[in-house]
Image (tube, rainbow, N blue to C red; front, side, top):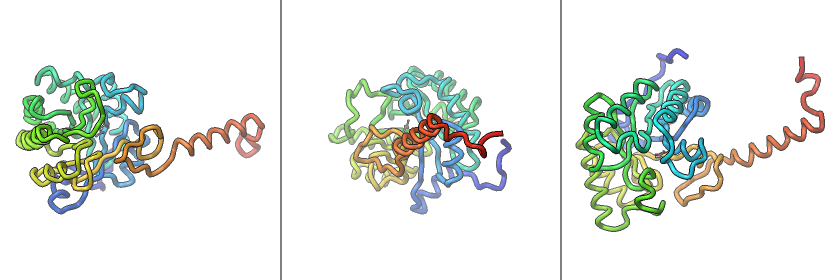
Length: 271
Ligand code: KIV
């Protein structure tokens, strides 16, 4: 599909200007062409091809199993549905932690093979060298602090992070380091609202919260959670805008009934 030249595209500069102007940034995950097209047309600012695809698309318990090849498949599908959003793609577990050469090679593959605009990776000081190398290669990087699902087995729980002073101090330091390294934004996941406020005020770049309260410069939700496709996950921070699970179940039950009763297809629905 040729790009729509009339559309004003969202860039990392746009997000920076939004923060400066006090305009909140909307971000949502997407993993395929059709939903990406809906979200882009609806006017969302950023689409994240999250490694949460591992959970919501592939049914894994954690984000760890998804591969770089699978992320590339999802991201290239999403990109074909986008006219104006900024598209950020998660570097999956194992594609950047070992060293900065591997991290850079993974980021380059994502940019080259998907046409996405930026990558996201989890962690602070530990991944700083990789962040620097990726940015030096011209690839915008979004950081991710707080609850970092790729480290779930290290922490052993999805509970709220950075509730102790040492953990909060590390997070504040990591945010400053990521900003200094050149990240264009930072996701803050499941941390106390007042800590997110402090971090958001201390860095020039936008913070995007998920379970991090109202003071972040933007918000992100996983599409399956906010659209009620997945109804089992009901954390306090989630606002569910639709119940696709129930609506789809009802629709499919009706379809089954119509087929069994020979009501579908009728005269008008055949050739
Ligand atoms: O993978 C993902 O969906 C994410 C969001 C929760 C921020 O990283």
